[in-house]
Length: 232
Image (cartoon, rainbow, N blue to C red; front, side):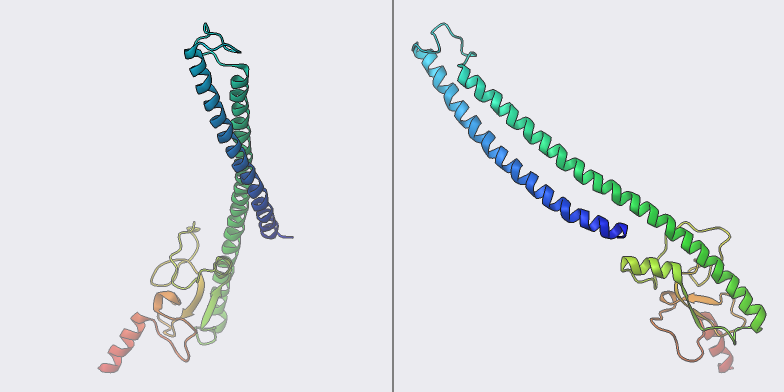
């Protein structure tokens, strides 16, 4: 079982545990409110008895700050209920905090793995591009499009399209950049068919492409130059 599947299973269990704790909290709160209501009534009655000088558990010499044992027991019971509520709330908080920490650790580990994959993919792309230029004598034998596997995999896992996205990632200063956005390779890219193009590779989103172009394709700058030559 992967971490994501295990974490999802634990979340389901967490929801049931929290539901039981919250139900118990509601019951304790109702019990506390009822106990406080009864205690207030008892204290008010005892205060009236003191003022009227009635006999019983309370003598006329008793001050207004002294109540019967029953009233004091009710107040102590209210304190115990309140303490139970606090303990339950702390348990619920600790459970949620534990799952949040687990998720943070998983996110950090995933980020480290993603960076390693991107670095490896960038090195492979750079090496294959240089080999293609040397072995095939230009662009005629190269594939017209390519896919930056690391970035597209990360995008697929998050459900975000890689075309036209603005990367805010730590970049190796030695890693080559491409496209009119002057960023590293990611997502699907297309090569300009002008052998003298200064940029060479472009991200689909940056040049308004959604799928692989058919036939020859020229970047905006090269297309403008090409049209200018035809117009002469």
